[in-house]
Image (cartoon, rainbow, N blue to C red):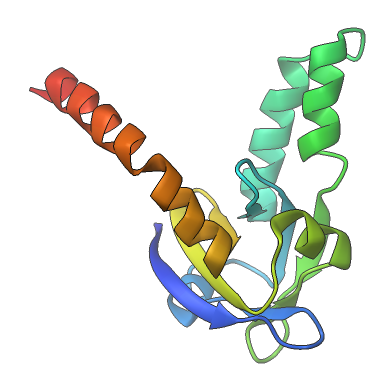
Length: 145
């Protein structure tokens, strides 16, 4: 189970540490990195990526404009990244630019994936979304009772 919130610095070569606790649960040393939603990156195991991308392709059509848009946003930019001996991955420049990754990063464990955020982008996201979170929590709380 991949969970947790971690802070790491992106080095000058675009490398970012994958938390040791999470690396222990990863089979192999290859992961799939792609654009996420809300200016973050999503990092999947190859097995999880196969499931997610397969479901996406099965539920979309190349003959519909909106589905081509979704495919181009998530599938096209996806790249294999290798975990090096010290537990780091190199984040390609195109994906660093998309996520606005500069130096300080937040790595979030989201059960089936990791999210990688620039620290400032992540803090701004929560400043903008806190009231929506409160409303969503209230709504969900009513459903759970």
